[in-house]
Image (cartoon, rainbow, N blue to C red; front, side, top):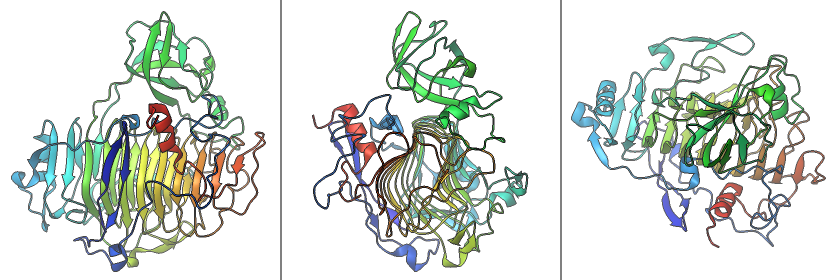
Length: 536
């Protein structure tokens, strides 16, 4: 594995991060391929020829509208992109709690003791190789687990979670599977949103509206964060709507609700105004309501650490041993940054909203690879999974290995994958209504499986509505998503493809612009600039 050393700079309130992958061998014994120096995506793409602007956006967003087919992704991530991730002062050192860091002594209890004893601040993990044999959990705000760099401070997990806490599971078809194939991790940020009913929404607000009428605004005030929630119906009418009226086969569709975190800007009688547009309608049949949003864990993080698992051959799809590194569950304004994951079954699982994952490197020993899940050189199940997740930002990732599912969205919305690359990336849309997510400024490597996805039968099309792909590159032309992959509201702008574009507004929006010429190169960054007024 390699160390990740980004340098951040601020420009008129918008925080832009440059990055480099520095040469460095990880103490876990990563192979020579994991030690090659690499340069990440440029912070600013230089067009090869005259710049070309999308008809959905224009040069500076002048063609964008709140209710159009192109969503607003600018509020994804830590503090909605309005603040840089802080460097939290150190408050504790795991070695002061008995950690040894020789790769032999079990340091699990020392790590947990250091975290438990820290009210606020960073728990430092000095250079070393730390054996971890059980869960390490952060369940409080303002606590950061920080190493000296992913090539210096390495957490070593000799056994998988299924050996530590056996847990049987099943696939969506009922077949036996490892309980850790789908979630769970050794190091977790875990909280509770304390979502309780505040008011019922009593009129139909449209997608793109910025306010709702409620039965009573008592207890709701400007500046407050609230959840806008919708409930599914027995006939899956909510799912059908989120698939833009074209869900495909949803006979086995799950009864999944939908939500958004919104900041209240004003309360005028029974009308509540928000700072951003709704991603959906508020029809009465979906029992729309406002709920409180009081996350018990915020401003916590995991950073500058390596995660290493044994290099035995990957056991296969749904047979994973639980070599799962990190999970964020029901936390807000938290982060994972500058970490390296070696030989993982699952890298990072996010079941949360409003967090940032920045600068993650995935590597594996050559002997771990096997042909599985339709992947010839597969070394794990999910690399980064956003499931039941909203408004998260994943950026500056690099894959030097392949997973069954590299970048996953499942029943997720408002999330952004940006500024990363891989050997042969796939954009895994795992059915169950992933809608209004953005993939932008990404190099897919070989480009042989961009649209390859998982998900059980009769759970709907792979992608739901308004999913957007912008400036997607590969070593070979990328075909369009297969027929039936998603509804007509998909947006595809500047794919590396030989196909002619179609932008009549009646079907999938496909602008066949060269990725080397499209501007902006990163739609998410451009939307932040427009919203915050930087550079004006």
